[in-house]
Image (cartoon, rainbow, N blue to C red; front, side, top):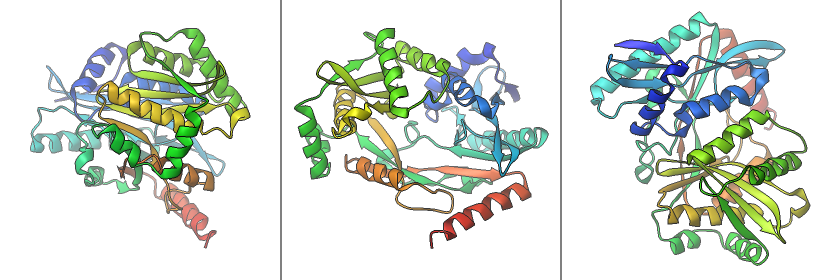
Amino acid sequence: MEIVSLGRQYWEKWNEFCIQSDDAWFWHTTWWMEYTLKHNPELLATSKSFFITDGSRILAICPLIMEEHVYQGLSHREFSYSGSYGISPATANELSAKGRRAILRLLFDHIDSLAINNNVERMSLRCSPLSPSYSISNAPQSNWLMRYNLMDVSLNTQVIDLGDDLDNIRRSMRRDIRKQIDNASRSLTVKIFNNENITHDIFEQYRALHCLASGRVTRPASTFEMMYSWIKMGFAVLFGAVLDDEYVGFFFVTTYKSGAYNGSSCRDPNHHKIPIGHFLRWEIARWLKEQDFEYYEIGIQQYNWLLHDFPSQKEINISEAKRGLGGLTIPLFQAEKYYSKEYFMQILQNRVDHYASKL
């Protein structure tokens, strides 16, 4: 077996592997990695991604990005994705259970070598519930990353099972959410843009509203161009809420294999009283079901502070609102590993102090 660094000449084979592997979702593709490398320029991100091959086929891939994080005034190198969790490795479907364990042991040993050789002090990984190998209907499962000397720092996420009857999906919503959607439907209409009808002009309207809602330009223009290309390739759909012939909100939804992820969204701050988000999520669920998607992930669930997660009250409220849309609350497996004792103690002490401040 051979370990090969990911170069541009291997992108096509890598993405073909992602389509075939049940462990992989869109976060594993080179398109998402390219986006992540550009998302936060201040992190000075570089790719350390690699794959394992037997000479004739890829057996496993490991998306891996090294970033520079400033903590307490000092720079620290981490394996992460735009300051957040990277995506877990993916293996070939044809591997036996024993073969998969052996390949993953080789893979994580190589990650450790890369960390040591590049002075990396922490690695953060996350498993995507939308990967076909994650059986949402049979969740919860175990966090398999812990088998490779990573610490569990999992959260939960909310997923709508689109295999259910549409009426049942609606009935599972909180009554007040259903009422808000009905009220919004009297004044709002939805426009849906995929690879058959998206135009650069429509996408520019989304980008302009994104800037207006944020109050500033939040990331490089190149990342928006990448998102536009995903729609053209059939890996994303843009949903717009229209009020009196004017776009007042957008949701950008990533679509890959049988799953869809509720990604970037924005709304006109001048229409904050209209439940644009609830309206669009319901319209998105309806459209996805018509297109035979199986699952629609609408976002992380945060209930209170944990030693590894400190959501704001706004984030807690958003989580509650998302649960009101019904669906399933399932594990979002996450894990981290430290390569520096000093960095670990600094991070842990800061977490303890932060948590204790609320007691």
